[in-house]
Amino acid sequence: MSEVVKKFMYLNRKAPYGTIYAWESLEVVLVGAAFDQDVSVMFVDDGVYQLTKAQDTKEIGMKNFSPTYRTLGDYEIKKVYVDRDSLAARGLTQDDLVAIAWEDMETEEEVDNIVEVIDSARVSALMNESAAIFSF
Image (tube, rainbow, N blue to C red; front, side, top):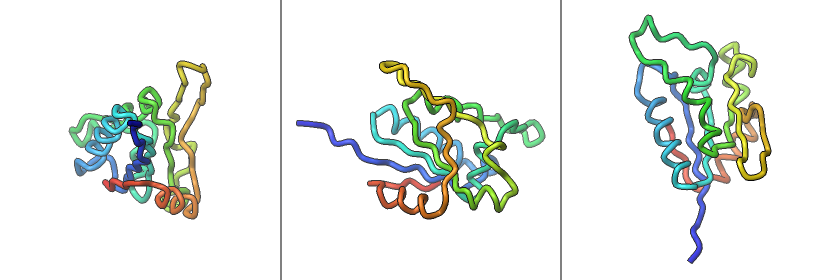
């Protein structure tokens, strides 16, 4: 009997700090990847702040977990999307986001940055292709 691989999308809408949503999402994403599912991660609305560079959490007394996003490629996650309109509404561009590298150990294929900024039509299309969407 062959295993069925489902497309799971993790939709991140919340800012990285102030709630537990971003941290919980990151944990669930890593668990999904560990079980060899087809994982994609989408950042929309204030969720785009989760991928911003040089986050400093000293003033709020919370641990900065943002460096963990750079390890997503190590977990074979190669689909990371950011909504272009959400970035623009917050005065951000792709240059403000961390780069996430990915390497296939078998073929030695490498991608320097798997973070893809996409338009709203592509956001909708990817959501429609997903078997399950987990919203945080």
